[in-house]
Every structure is written in C-alpha cells, then in structure tokens.
Length: 139
Image 1 (cartoon, one colour):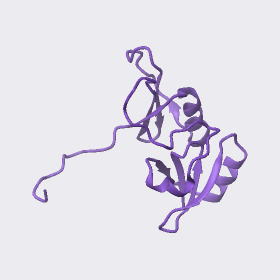
Image 2 (tube, one colour):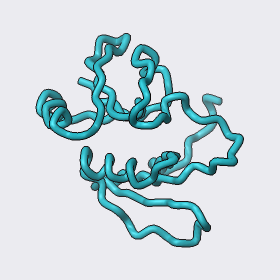
Image 3 (cartoon, one colour):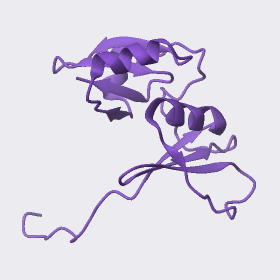
C-alpha cells in the first residue's frame, strides 16, 4: 500500500446523517452550530432530505431513516428523551466540533432546549455530548 499515490485534490464533500426526525435534527444544527439550509433537490422520492452547509466548506445531509431498512443503526441514534450510555460515546459513531471558547459554548447550550451530558474522553479531553450522543464538543 505504501507505493500507491492518493487521489489528488481530495476533500470531504459531505456527511449524511440519518434520523427519524429530520426537522428536529435540522433545527439542532441550525440553532447550535449555525448551519444554513441549502436548496435540496426534490428528486429523492417520498422521504425527507435536507441539505445543510456550514461555511466555508462543510456540508451535512440530513436524511429520513427508512423504517423498513434492515441496515444497522448506531445505538446512539435515539429519541431526545432516551438516556445514552455516556461512558461509551467516544467509541461510537459521532461528529466532534472544536469551538474557540469551550466554556462560552457550554454556557450557551445550557440555556437551550438540547440535553447536555458530561463525560471524559480517555485522552483526558473534556467532553460534552449533546442531544442524541452524536455531537461532541472537545477541549
């Protein structure tokens, strides 16, 4: 593998996030991180899809989960009133965001409707997990 050259000009195009409540998750990314809605093609069929963008280059596609799907789902994609196992969150699928002022971000989140839990990453990072166990703030 060491002799293989990587593709040139590669960058991450987008991440797709599956959920049973697209509107709730879109609200989360807009309210907490400032994502903006992009024009989303209506050619996906009879399920809800919303494209989001966080300048300068980050894109997130929020896709309605097919209730008939047999594909595995992350154990941390749970309703907002469920209790996730915080001790295992750092090992599961997640997005992690770095903010310039961690304490200010946490104080802002405490005043919002999103559930916030505290944990500790094994590499001694302060970890706060928001809502469904998928979004993390690290310092």
